[in-house]
Figure 1 (cartoon, helix red, strand yellow):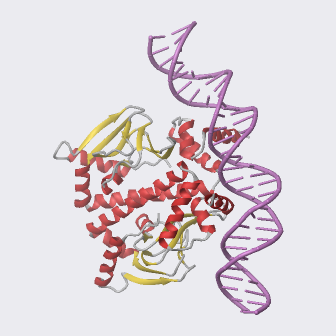
Figure 2: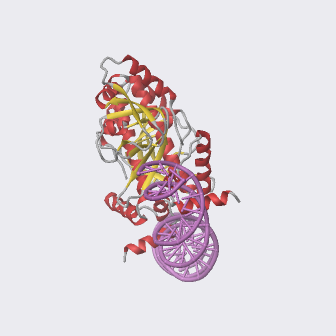
Length: 188
Length: 188
DNA sequence: TTATTAAATGGACATTTGTCCCGGATCATT
DNA sequence: AATGATCCGGGACAAATGTCCATTTAATAA
């Protein structure tokens, strides 16, 4: 559920090193808490995370938030919006200090249209994401909360990060109160 | 939520007409209730729906089912599995009589690797799907059931199809009992 | 260190949702 | 018409979840 994609990052680094114009890909840094994207606004960049962890979330009228995903090294963001020419679907916030390679949208599209290897690489990444997103959705519907929570806790310990209770709840789609109840159950 | 994609279908029809080998793309028909794919098995085809309506669903250990999506004319299925070389993620069942153009996986991959226009077209379709899937997931978490139900009912009347209560519930991720309660509320 | 804010915890109660179940309606087949 | 299968509707109760809130515990700023 916390996905990383080294292959994609490697290719990005190569492109960064090779670039003619210096503005095609730039390195950007964000500090913990900053937003890389704001839902509903238009961004001019497509980014590949090279360091750190971000959360990708929706906020709606009732000001509740739903975390779509936690993303880490090698993940690409802003690609969908660039392909479909739409404003940012969700907000993305740095949960740790974050470094990214930021492609200009123009350059990103040039790559897509001119480089079939790149295009196929992105297809693979997107297929992966769809697998992930849809299986997660079904998972949370079909299995017990206990099950989903277990997975989340595993990831958390693997990654050695502390996710706030509020974020965990927003990811699981439940209230913090329910999360606490569930956590207590885990300790018998 | 019930998506169709005419552009994609048009391109498929052209390819079908032009094909050299007769086995690259074949037309297949399914009758209501038949499965186009079975979750967990390996299929050798990628299909584009040219007529009819299907449901795409997961079933899990507890034999509950979760409907990921209803798909209609122009939608492509089996693409993800072909790209990622994995068994079918979900089952797909014909809700009406259905006609499809069935690509052999080999030919489908040839197209992807050799035809950048096709590759970009698929990228666009996949981006669309991600937008759709993730916004639906958040939608159902953030908004009331009433809201989601309204949308489902609208679609149903637009498409002039009768979706079974069981399917509606599986799509909304609730029990039929809850669905009935909710429907009753709509009539004040 | 102290003041201030944010996060975590859990009780009490109200709602929502699920499970179990049975009777009625509908449709197809014999 | 009789039979069986499937779907629909809703009562009754149990379980899960949310809301509200007050207390405690970090975390951060002054």
